[in-house]
Length: 264
Image 1 (cartoon, rainbow, N blue to C red):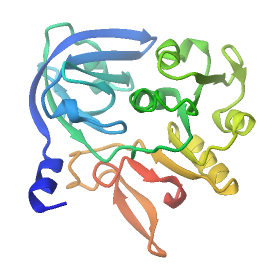
Image 2 (tube, rainbow, N blue to C red):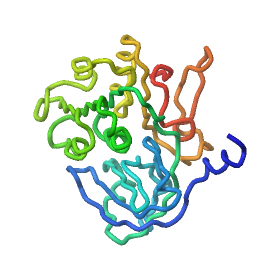
Image 3 (cartoon, one colour):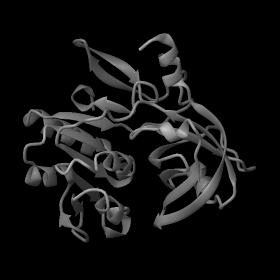
Image 4 (cartoon, one colour):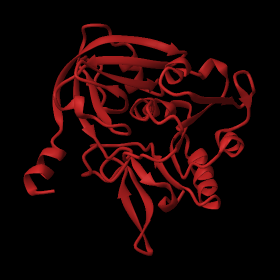
């Protein structure tokens, strides 16, 4: 990659976008669709954006939201209300303007081998974008895990792009009772790669599973962020690199990492 290509690949969009639609898809979890841009349409699975509602209810920091889908017309973002910032976002209406910066971070790499996708809770959101990219790979399988049926979302959307979709819940109210790692242990065939996003205990368990079964694993980490550009170091995590441990930024070097190198 020459210097011009590198500069172009790192170019990000910052500007006002219009809210096209916003819906509460399950209690406390929202899908917001915003107008796209030339740069946002180039987003990849696993990347994220920073957004700030144009409202008087300003918070100090913008909020990072995962990209669930993106094309030339719209960008779909999914978030769960966890505090004031996301509460303000949930109050957006069609036609509102929001400040958007992105796409940010390094997402999932393209793979041509049979792959297992694993999503837990809100972590299922970026996997929808990845599932669409892998829809022609009939050997791709997906396991979604939720606490219960009331928190499950996007099941039909995933089934519209992938043939092999498995759902499990902690209480057995939807799909099979159990967790994502256990379900993957039941269905695994000749897959050599896992791509996962979800709670850290799930990612830790999956990384151990991948190591025991000689599989590669890529995990998308979720951390509190300040700047989103790698300057504030507010989102660092410990990673094994070159025989030593070092801190890397989730917003810049991630959010997708080699799961075998993450120190959980």
